[in-house]
Length: 249
Image (cartoon, rainbow, N blue to C red; front, top):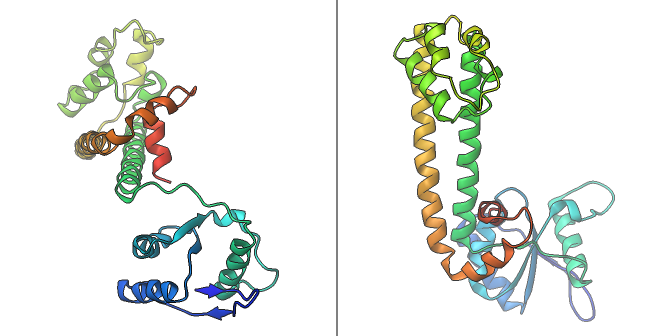
């Protein structure tokens, strides 16, 4: 905590830990001093415990992007940073980031992480096939499609004959010929590949179900803002999924 001297305002610098008790002492101290505005860096997740305690205190809280703050020249310390942020706040030079309500930001951030994990599993699936000399990524652009899923299911069941796998891919949207597909699915698929494939598929299915559950809960909690969301979605390239991504920040 830092308050910077001005007209009749003394300078005070104090240190507090991140425990709930210590942060509550910080809140009480700020209230006792008559502080109305508080600014802090949005560094990682470290601002969240502070905000959770200070928010009910009625302060005007500004969560500031650290990249937008020009630090004092010289050796960087937390105390110097706090004093500098305080000076910028008193001068009206800070712009706070939009911070959604806690349940919204927690749910949407978690959803974003699960989507990233799902993408990681997709990439791991492709690498697994590459390791087994199966060049499926060269003939399939969508590793979640029905045709690709049929191929995977047959590989798991040990039906790895190239001609048969190619016959499963007789889809007009595929640009590759049957001969090209047969060459792509001709590989060296071993038992440990099959074991890993099952594990990856289970992980992907679980992640997909968790994302669906989060979507349902987020939609329920966002119902009071449905009118505002619909107006935002009228902006080109903006949709409800993008809104959930924005809310996690």
